[in-house]
Amino acid sequence: MDEMMDVAVIGGGAAGLAAAVTVGRQRRSVVVVDAGSPRNLPADGVHNFLTREGISPTELVTTGRAEVELYGGRVIRGTASRVDGGVGDFTVTLDDGGTVRARRLVVTTGVADELPDIAGLSQRWGRDVLHCPFCHGWEVRDRAIVIIATSAMSAHQAHMFRQLSADVTIARHTAPEFGGEQLEALTARDIGVVDGLVTEVVVRDDRIVGIRLASGVEVACDAVVVASTGRVGGAVVESLGLTVEEVRVGDHLMATVIATDPMGATGVAGVWAAGNVADARATVVASAAAGVNVAMAVHASLMEDDIAEAVAARRAMTPVG
Image (cartoon, rainbow, N blue to C red; front, side):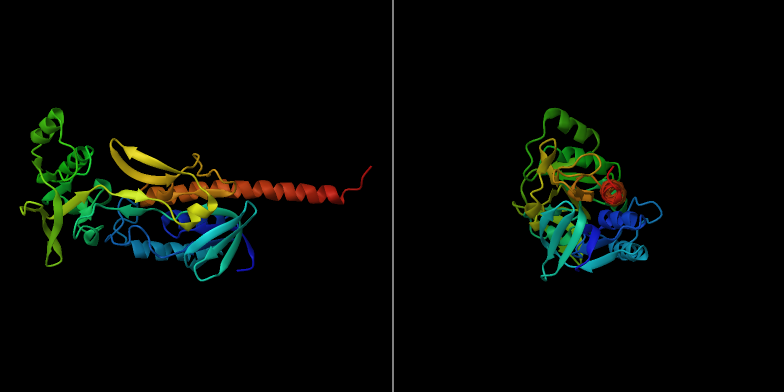
């Protein structure tokens, strides 16, 4: 693309598509660079998204792309391999050698989930291996749930899922021993605790039937809960020199994210970030809302440039004296 666009959005999930629709509706030229690998792709459906309850991640993205194009935006399938230039003239290079130029950038590339190294765990991620009771807890209600504990915060996670099922067990795995008050609270709510490292998620007939400990003991269950660590990174973040910070909940590293101000502006002029890449706690609907907010800030920034350019042009045409 040789044309200078107003905005280039890198990442085509809920945040990126919402940002593109919003700036498109302000008659801004916008292009979305989408690698086609949303974080929630393995999930059966999106939840807590008002009026879109249960929609598949693929359908949500397909609908979002159509809305971007409805307002004159473009969606390019590809992966951004680096970004050069600066505010007013960024060049995004794609993995196929193509380039996109834009006055402003919005980074919505999301994060990659890092999971414990347990056989079978990653293959079931987003299906019957879960992490968030708000995202997918309803779907495993009243089933036997095992929490694979990797930190002291796993006790809190067990209590959250206890709201949804009376059959919850913690496999302590690499978590420190629970203190007296923690054990008392777990016992009071009938949450079992099993010691030992978890070595395998046991699957039969394409469903989880239990976990296996290093001792060989198998604990039956229908679903597994584990805390992931969302990692931000990649060529775009590195080439732009964006600041990355850690988000911790107690002793658990929840994620690394791009540092932004409340409106999503990063420390690099002309660059904003939205969604999980900037907010570790953002659900799909929250990511979409963040994309809208960032787009408003980007539009305001572009408008300031437009005003300055118009004033300068008028002054140049005005006779002196």
